[in-house]
Image (cartoon, rainbow, N blue to C red):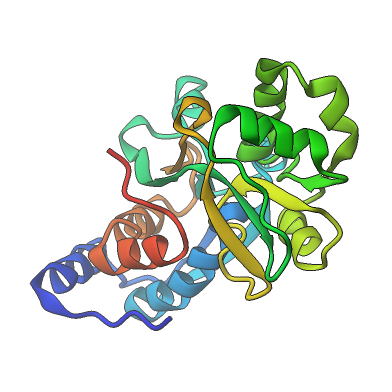
Length: 252
């Protein structure tokens, strides 16, 4: 999807970005959660064209990215599929830089044309998990870790955990698209760009946990000014539209 800059709000957003200054082009080191990759890769060229800066990006699951931060690997901006507040408390991010990008609920998706499980109630969702031969999750991703908590809560962890297939960033989408699992339990953003995947909807409200996507600026950022420009850009109407198109709803 191509997002064009239209309307007063979008123009105002672009002016805000440019106001941070582009006199000196910078290489901005960005750590990006795999769940936001689809939206980010669409937005990155727009930001680079508008500012002259270059984004040097690394993608991965949140634990791997946080491990890089903990190890002292240099970065300017981090985008995670959970709240960066913990990193702020640790002094690793600038407090005022916390930027909320949106949220996504946990739901179910299948390979296009595959049988559709009934997960309309808590008991039916539980039965679908028990009856499945294999399911996919995002593993160490935010939704994958929540699924493990949910299985314990439902009292079926022992039966279902051996059926779970997962892997690195993007692996859950590959598994369900290839028909290697009955269905995937995940947030929508990592799945939405694959034409072989059909999103069926969110799990029952009683079991739901919305995943908040946030970003922040490193306390040791080499390119702090340019990093702030990127964070401002990610909140412009054009960027919000891309995030929404990629499965991320505005957060309250």
